[in-house]
Length: 89
Image (tube, rainbow, N blue to C red; front, side, top):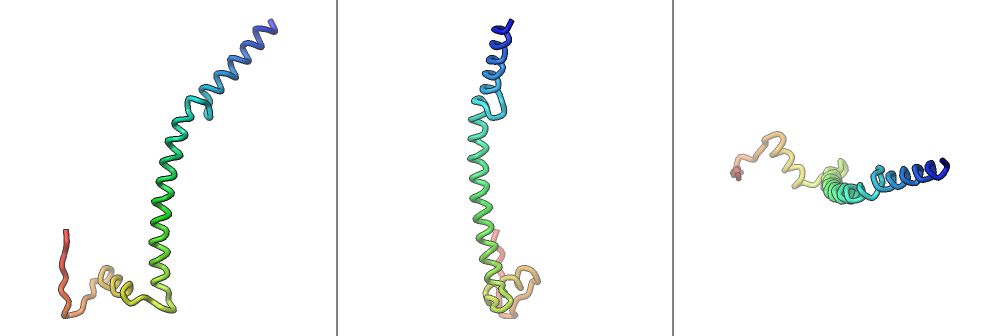
């Protein structure tokens, strides 16, 4: 009786090692998800760097003239009378 119970416990633990949430079967899935998350993290870091740059250029104490001009043109549709607007597809 005790040997059967011990065998059942060992089989249960072996099944848990193979098929559990962090088992050998799910290891490749976890590696794939880790790779996806690392790519997503790199993309978000690049976006954050772009936004940091824009914030630095729009510092209220010293606004970058090119950035201010770009925002006026894109957001408010403001152009100088002698400018020509070219739309690119």
